[in-house]
Length: 68
Ligand code: SF4
Ligand code: SF4
Image (cartoon, rainbow, N blue to C red):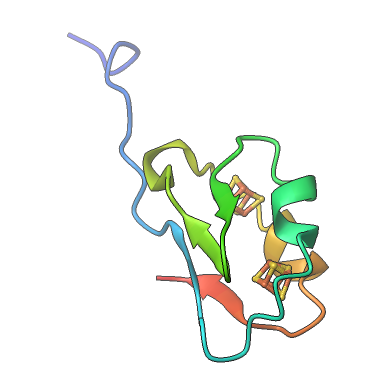
């Protein structure tokens, strides 16, 4: 019995505060997993792919991304 074949599910995908997003696209550009789409604001359309790396949080000039 072991755990090597168990794939952990993400516990804390990112979420964007649409009120402060200026649609600059920085999160879209930096995310290695292509979690974001840019519409009027950034939208996390592929949350299940988020690896919790935190790059987008550091990159956002408006500081409007956080983990859920
Ligand atoms: S934490 Fe990393 S993987 Fe998740 S949305 Fe941000 S940049 Fe993408
Ligand atoms: S980096 Fe921040 S301000 Fe820029 S599009 Fe993403 S969430 Fe919006």
